[in-house]
Image 1 (cartoon, rainbow, N blue to C red):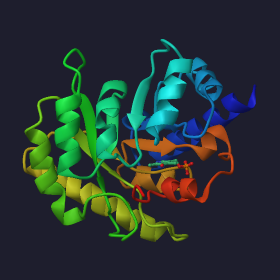
Image 2 (image 1 turned 135 degrees about the vertical axis):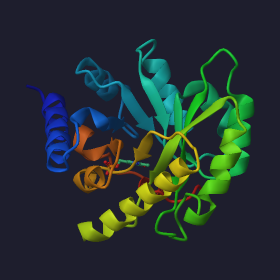
Image 3 (image 1 turned 90 degrees about the vertical axis):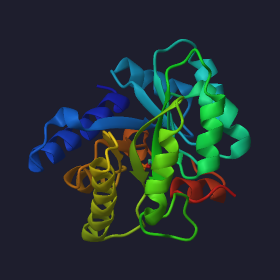
Image 4 (image 1 turned 180 degrees about the vertical axis):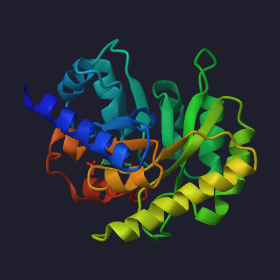
Amino acid sequence: MNVTAERLNRVRSRLQKACERSGRAVDTVRLLAVSKWQPAEAIRSLHALGQRAFGENRLQEALTKQAELGGLPLEWHFIGPVQSNKTRDIAAHFDWVQSVDREKILTRLNAHRPKHLPPLQICLQVNIDREPQKAGIDPDAVRALALAARECPALQLRGLMCIPAQSDDPRVTRASFLRLAAIADDLASDGFELDTLSMGMSGDLETAVDAGSTMVRVGTDLFGPRPASAAGHHAEARGAKAS
Ligand SMILES: *Cc1c(COP(=O)(O)O)cnc(C)c1O
């Protein structure tokens, strides 16, 4: 078995064990392969092993890889900071945007989603630990943004996404995940039909599954370490705002 297949199997088996431990069916958690900074060939290899959903956080990099991959039937998720001058291309070239954190972006994605495509699938990114440097909407403002999303016919609000504060203590991370789950529950009791809690990455996917995640976003443990790069990249990987 090659290294890609081994990594994928390891992540799948971690997910399966986490689901068993939490008394959940394994098909209730989707795996998003975060392919940022990885070459198109790495995406092709995972696709050949059955992986369909890929996450990218930079528009230009994603468009280049999409062109290289031609007609491969993949599901593309945008998970990085959305600048308002990029909404036209993002709306045209992605199936999901998980990092919507303000109304202006909602409105522009709605206006720019091409009419021949199905609605763009949206998650609201929540700054669950209220970290000043981090992207995401304040937990108290989620409901207003969800109401605004409801007014956008070219968008379908699927749920919430978060990147919790860095912590070595799984109990702290778990508390953050549970707070995101509670916000989603509140929205559900307000009549929002949400099915997605996008939380959990390489280091904390078990904790996220136990707290109710329905989609884990895994980069490093699927592809290996990302190539060392500019400092800004590393800040972005931890969910920093667009500079
Ligand atoms: C990079 C990134 C991930 C993946 O992180 P890993 O620790 O490499 O698994 C997940 N979510 C977002 C938003 C990211 O930017």
